[in-house]
Image 1 (cartoon, rainbow, N blue to C red):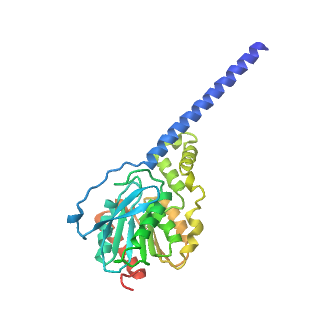
Image 2: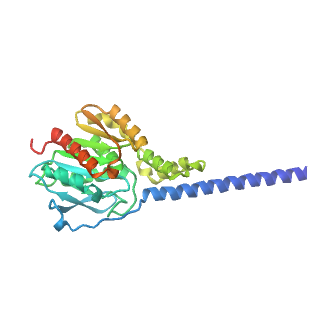
Length: 301
């Protein structure tokens, strides 16, 4: 009996050790992966605004958890609406300057900035939670300017920027029209997509562990509902959904959000996502965006 009991004790100890090793290993891998996702590589682009086309100026606005954020304001027609251009995940404001130029050429005021953890903005990304608040803060600040229409704003965003746009449009009545590309209903969905793309989901439980760590890091936003829960609030607000064939997961999410959204709404399809478009495809895409805003949020009322 003593020999048998000793063997059982050793077996139990071995199993416990293996389980603890597995838990520590999975937690370590998942923690490192989440850290990499919320701290994407930053390659800030520097520009001399004094020589940039469009005569942009810097405009700063406060954010909830840090120093003032600096953006670029491209002036259009006096008193015209302002279109806020929101870049996507692993991108920065410099990557969407051609869209800014196209909008400004049609007399819109245009504003853009770098989200947290991207471009010139330090910190970490929440894949949309905090970013939506940054968009709202920018609108609040821009709404104090005397050279813009303080009650009419347009929003454009892609993936993470699109989520921030949709969240803002649901709660701010000053948003008169918005366009989103490859949007998703929750930052957790974006996190899971990034984990799957890493190839580490072959390790058991990494996906669930990464999701749990991300939720813990963003505990402050634990009560935030899916963006689809309040999409009915955009009733009467013109909206344009665009899906990319090369992003099947995001295309599915965007299509579902389009189906759930109230009128008026439009749906367009492109072959590739915005940042991977050729010059000609990008020009056609940007012309479609401008046409949408000209129809529903004209520079002159």
